[in-house]
Length: 294
Image (cartoon, one colour):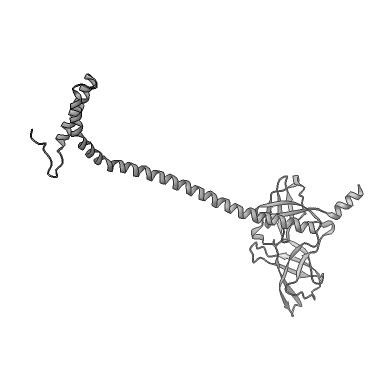
């Protein structure tokens, strides 16, 4: 029997492979008809001997195709894992950002509770939910507490750092606060060093550079830079309770010709980052007198 024709590189030609495959199919058909152990066994062994190398060659030819499929599947899995990791990282960054805000807010709550407790003040704690204008006023804040919480007009509003302003108007669930730095706001102040009285007016700026101007009742008073200023207070503590820290004297300028002084006060409160505030709804003295009257 003449040898099978081969390609120049020693491999069998495609025609031989097709012939061998047809032979294998014939063997399988014969085997199914005659049953095991029939005359097909020698043929099967011969076909196995001949087809074994061909099967190995075909398997080798298909290996790169399988590798491409595996690579495609692997890349898809990696893309899914990367997307999951990016989503998890975004969630963790969001949690970290909220944790910083919550930590700062908790510190403000604690500071506010400590300062109001030391002053014997009863407050409703609230959060600033907006900044903007109201009616003819330019510097106001909206808080998330209103008349349903006991908040009413002309109540003092403060933070852990000092005086914020007063309630301008209130609805059932929210209130508008006129800020200390508004140009239309006038607050009585007292110099902490010698108890001299004066009036504070804002410059309308919410930035850290925003300042108050103090005009003393006695024009001859010359405060020192660094002197503290607290709220003067109003009859019945409306609209301002007495003794709330306002700021410190930053600069004193004199005009010999006009015999006046310009006193610049830097507020303690950073109005550009207002968050947690307290609305004064009573104090220990009024609570005690009410209890005794009852």
